[in-house]
Length: 296
Ligand code: MG
Image (cartoon, rainbow, N blue to C red; front, side):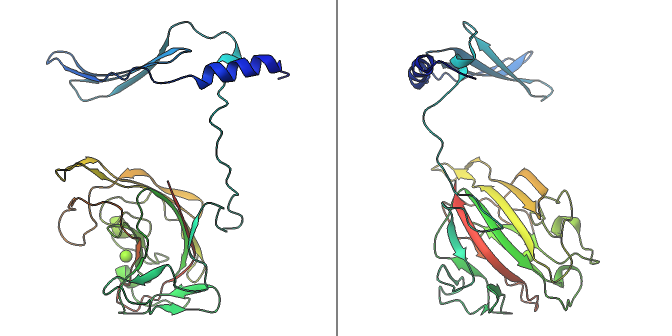
């Protein structure tokens, strides 16, 4: 743009001083009108108002209004500080520079058995993968996590066995509680809220994006953990986004509670918890590789 340097420096100074001087939150409930939630941010450069109106019929309207003197120079709305952190990206599935590598094929150092916290007895393969050892139980990370971005790769065995829920069934349990289903649904139908990529019994996936049986699938998951107050009430639901082999299959869906095969999801209070991987105990022989996680 060929900007004058002195103008940039001036702009950095002005924009750097932007602070939220006021944060006003009011709720108005008029039976004949609207529920009005009113946020007001006063900045040194401009005033921004965002209003969320909820009419009686429940329809929500979001309006963002910029008031005050409107900037006329593009430089007045440019922000230079703070700088965005640099992360060396994932290349061909490799972990980004700020990720925690949970499994790279060399060992189970980041994992333990769920049932007794003992060393992992799942099979460590010589191709950089691991395979569920039937009836040995779930494994979990030694570390606990809250909000995360998770990458993992999984595959069903080439020689598939079983039908419905018993064909290469495993699962990724965020915080050990909320399952993203792993299942071989190639020519194998089941209830859609329990098929591959479902948030088990809570959210049907938008698409079935599996590769053929025996090939590696990618899951990229963005998870926001639920938040509870001191009374144990859930004050913000958790959300999950899942991209399966590059296809969006769960779009920021709201978690209803802990995954359960029977009954309704429940919402016990919890904080950070380990990630777990499922042994479905039916000789499903699901394999995993290249698991990394970024705390958000
Ligand atoms: Mg499962």
